[in-house]
Length: 364
Image (cartoon, rainbow, N blue to C red; front, side, top):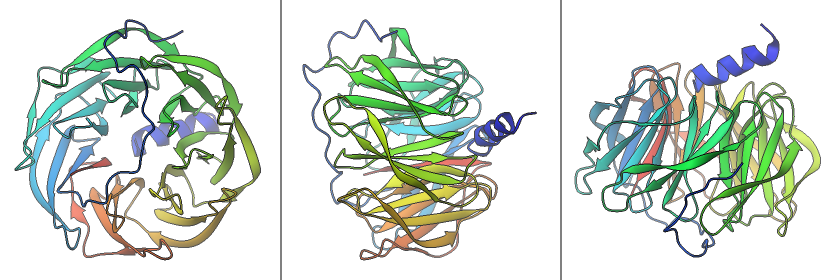
């Protein structure tokens, strides 16, 4: 097995054309804004190997998680959870069964109830995300090399597939939108690039081109100002910074990549663009980088240990807490965040999750 294929297998199992028929969308795409400074009430965890979602109540003062329930997803290998904008519904991408499950959330208790049966997606839905209009869900299909779209019924949460798919390059693993809502970026693990798309007012994607982004791009994140993009390279163990052309969406590399830990699998930027966090699945570390808000340059400021195989990090909107999913140790680690330096400090004992937790979503 080639090194790249081996790395992709690790990424999956440790973590693990145009869209048409888009009538009924908002007439324009609103500029996205940072989430309100409100602490989350509930946490939901996608458990990759046990095909389930674990739910937790969150202590608003300490951030600690109290287990509530675990429910099956109805699919296989739950990889990621996306919350609908109102907070009434969440969606789970099931990598091995090639489908997406829908759940309604009780606003008072956080309890989950499945809505209908899982909806077929493309091969290997590795990442799902709600688009800028709020009424389209996008599925990044790693095995099919496509992005597919679904309209969201705001009353029932039900997903309706949109006709057509968008082609990516080889093994897409993550999609992020520019804060303006006008551009989308897909990291392609096997082809070593990021494909860039224009997003029209209906939510449809149109391919603009591709930018080389290292050996194995494994994650991408956008600066909240929209001026910079940050891309992790799983094989080279680094993070590269790119400037973003505000008119065309084009990416241009800035300087040399900065070293991360071994096997970076996720990048998370805080809502003010001051700090960037990287989970490193192979060596079990989490890096904190200070971001120069003028140039986008990264300076590593601290490193902490996560659990075994940390694969994703989620920041609470209050800016006080971070939650790391540790696939290898079946746990979620809580960190408090230093408001001045962005440094992480482990708080209490990790919370137990299902088998192979891969993603944490917070519900306000």
